Image (cartoon, one colour):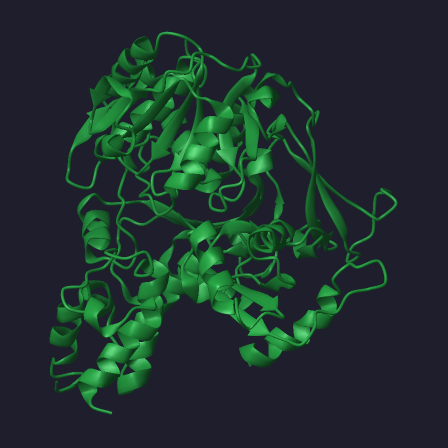
Length: 475
Length: 80
């Protein structure tokens, strides 16, 4: 059974290279995946505690190609949050890094390969799985919300094919990992490159480590992806001066890059003959929805581009009427075969079918120009992107209130979240709590204590009036 | 403030840790010293000593001790 990839097609070509030089071919990726799937023995739910390592990818492709439904989680996920998810979804198995066994002393190891182990949880198919369901991904990756996006086999294959088409990927590509594989953007890079028989360079090292760049150069990486913060780091590293002759393309997604930085990278890429793709997407659309062709990167600064092959954009006003004139902002709606089935918030939801019918209301406010290029101008829903991770501010407010019983409102701009509270007593504890829950670097979080949080007559927080407090601290 | 005090403060403020955590501290030993924290640290060191660090030195600064070694180099001239 091949649900997504025909791995054998690429035979003895190298599929994966790990950071210490270990590697496996496409044939081995196929046979390793099958052996793992046989150890599982049936279609069921399994958690993968992901790392950018060979074992992790074997689990992912082995499960997906053999009808086992993985939920992708970061191997560094807070243990309490992980245990909550296990109780809520009752997966039959967990595919985890071998060193994690100590965390699950009661679970038996059923199979092991490439420093990963298959743990039997003791649950046996507690929840029925819809036949279309291929994969579960979290939307935020961090707050430990039990909400998953349900992706189908058709979604994944379709989106990967579109990406292959617009990025013009071939088997000679060697992308290096810069994003976690449980993150939709990181995963889409794996999905699309395995489809064309390329070689993935897998590393847990970050851009801020010498080992990353040594691996990059020794293995001749041809591309990488990055969220806005990645590009800020590259800018800081004076990336423009690095000698990387193997580099062919760079992609950017996971939030809007500052237009000046977008231009800086676009100009640099043009001079060096590297393709620079600004892209747009969401987990709810599998991964990608839009991309800016590299030859327009400087001309259309600040734009996220045009719909991917097979997709369509439209903008609607608050009465759901389509806006057909340029430069008028409304909610961006996407239509395409990569729009996912819907959400799951508990095990019972895994039987649900397609609730979206190929249409996604993105929650992003956008407009297009006279040439049909789209620009994101704001958000309808209250969330921020912190280092590329979606953090839902309303959920955050509720979590803090439930824990501390104080008046609080979180707000801010991407990569800068402000916790505004009237409680000077708990302000530090609240910040610690938010950091622990999101598992994101504390540099993104600041607390401001004020006398009272402005509410309207019906008790809703007036977030616009909170802007003045954090704008003061930013300047 | 002495140079070692400035150096220690950059670490303590960037990673929200105290002085006793510093000896032997390495990249990714603590949650706060990830790639984001590293950027914060570099910015703090550059400001504290009024220097501009080279790319190779930024990615080589993998521990508390290594940082002192790097800043002691001729081009930065920080004496501890």
